[in-house]
Length: 115
Image (cartoon, rainbow, N blue to C red; front, side):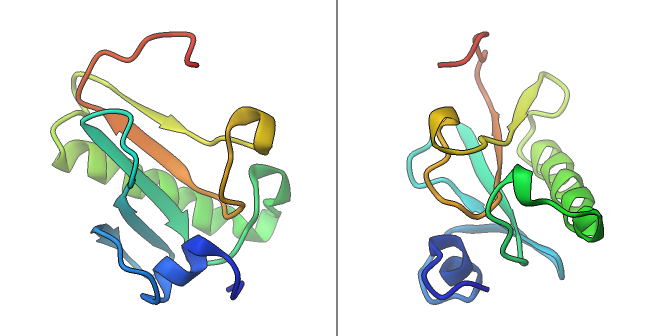
């Protein structure tokens, strides 16, 4: 964990969040600035800055993130109608916190292309 990382501090319960899901590999919580009725962030408990920094040994975290996203979408009632699972990579793509995170968005019709 990185002491100066916002998401690491949330995982460590040093900063409060609205927890949605947690297991041994990932932590998921409500986005503080939701862009859809369902907007949950799924983060690995290992500090990985971006998709570009994922290594082969991190595959268990990525699978856990995707499994959590699937569960959250089902629990929130958006899995059948549709939802979006998004990784933003680096600043030009909108990444503002440099700890890998998967946005799970749904509950409304999502336009394409995004932003």
